[in-house]
Length: 109
Length: 275
Image 1 (cartoon, rainbow over the protein chains, first blue to last red):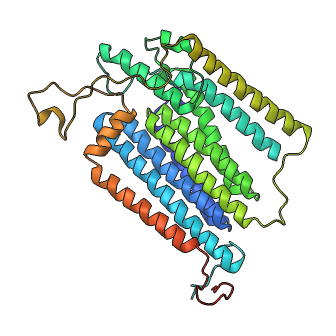
Image 2: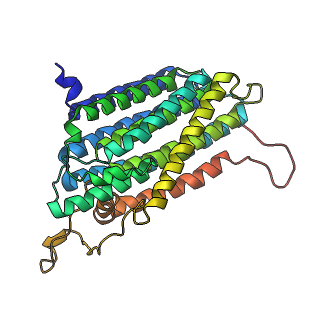
Image 3: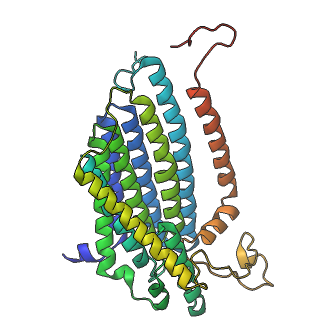
């Protein structure tokens, strides 16, 4: 029983990544502020990265380094997504004076 | 609440600076290097980890070349649980706060803890990238947008009270003490390599390695997760995705400017055509 606490395995990192992804999903679904939603998306991307790196550590060798390359590309894409998303938030706020995603229903119906 | 944020940041900084020398001790690396390479790779990895964390350059870890099985020790498990708790707590902090700046600060703490977890997974290069890109660039972008969106009806996020000032003073003192310790260590040992040591001559490894140029010696092994090893894979097999990512970043820059630019008519001076 104590091995769960004292012996680190890949499952520890995978479960942590799953919990982190779940928290990010809850943030996307529950919060109404667009900035918090974007931060939750970043959390989910980080959870995916943690999963990739845990499996990379598990495999080792060149395959693991390919996982590192994938995580690197994910970080770059997340940076691009944050830049464009924040620009959209600023543009929306400039026209409507709020960033509440529940009230942004112009495309609904 | 702000005092709690400061306390969390202080604890995090102290923990990272204490934990970085421990992570610099490699043990049970996935692809075991030959023993002659092991000592050098270990020095490299220690220097990288120190540069990653920006922590003190303790001279005593240079004098412990043998593996002590850190990864299987209870110390590693302790660090994992600490980092996991910080990650979960920081992310819960993000999705529960009403104050946006507090949420951003929790996000920064989460990213630092995740960088620690990456370092535990021998992804030293990605830990550094995580701190630089996420905790540095992206969070600064978020803070800027929060400052733009939060109109002056919100009170400024200032720390009042004696406890906050005491905490801030303690943090600054701690930072100065560690920094002076690093500088003194450099002064006392002019031969100490704080940055990465001068690399030995690297033979060019083409795609496929020794299989494609059989006349030469097999390519030397790099430490798993080091910058050089990741760069070799990234610039050989994954060169096209790398360049595609540069294109994605270019599109993001152009798109961000095009979306966030204020739309003023040039010919008539009407104030902003909106919606």
